[in-house]
Image 1 (tube, helix red, strand yellow):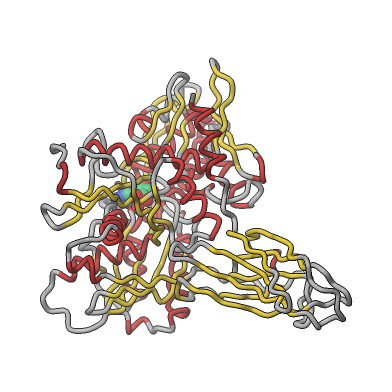
Image 2 (cartoon, helix red, strand yellow):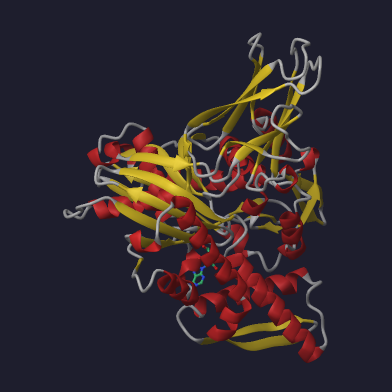
Length: 542
Ligand code: AMP
């Protein structure tokens, strides 16, 4: 690990807060470029893991290194819980596969529980756990840069909902960071790619760039346009916040556990430690299968003294995960359709995220784009943090002309709308009235007019949803509030103006106003009480 650099670096950092690994980077004025910052162990990516070993909280490498010994108190995949509710179906599915305990807390939040013989239970929200990872990265950056870091740009999957974004911002605040901006991961990768390209002297035209980003837990696709002048505009995004390498590992673990049962009639699935050892072996085998066509999964004394050994071919791996791979291509098609761009008009296909090293994934993409070569020039693990560091430098007032000229135009990934107890537009009980359709460029402000539907109606309940279904019940419920003080009048006579405004971070603010009187109520949707969280966390850690 090289020496701290001191004053020639910016104090604003870029952080890729990943499901399985995270990465931090900063702009170095001395070299006029971004550098990826190594952690204490000298590695450029840090496991997104937090553990409680009975006396200490461990974060990053030290947490991951003791995972097979202490599976019930080693947390990973926490990004999958961010901004979600305990009872969400996908959260429930994840919980079943994790060795650590998750319970329902206040406001239906999932709370992660550390259990240890010598201690009372300790429970933490996903934001709190993520803040520990962010703090670890912040401290690694401070040690490397030799100065205090206060500002950061943090990346989120393009497909993250408003709540998931807000939770990420809260985690940043808990870690003592001023979150200058949240930026979508593929957009961030596109900055890294765009900057890489700007080194080329011959860049004759604007380019349509498709970014395919598949990491450990999330999958994002984006169609962006990069102009000669340095404007990166996102035309459409898509993906799945619950699809990635962890799913492939899980399928392999299920398959191996079944093999073990068939062979020796023993069920390992109830034993957290054995399952974790199997998972580690399967993940390693998965990586091996990216460079070889056959490998073996071996775990000594897996369960009740019995060893496990199984050959795994690349073909078997591909078959086990075939349905996931097919889903990826469906998302690619949808994204191109949303962007209104034919695949032949895509100039470059850029792949990022650890799971894009899987040969089948690359092969399916090449076939879909009729033999186009994939751009792998940017590092799959580091590109996202790299782009975030460039944006952090820009927002700090960079002296670099290329960085200064960079303009970002992002879009909202999911439609936003309301169900309201109003009339005049034949809203069924569960109909979603869309105010801002998905893939609208942000920041954006849109108004929608509604009218009262009862005689003498004096208030209106507004429920805010995000998603693509016509029925609100199938979408993500964000928040609700009531506008009162409507002057009593016959039905349809009072107009209510509902205004949605999305900032550059993709975070929503909603207001409703009685047009005749000007009376207004506003709500920063899903904004958590960060100060309360900070206070609670300090108490727990003391
Ligand atoms: P990321 O979130 O981008 O750091 O990606 C992490 C995911 O990539 C994890 O699920 C890893 O198991 C997976 N991964 C990393 N390297 C490889 C590889 N060579 N082959 C297959 N998957 C990989």
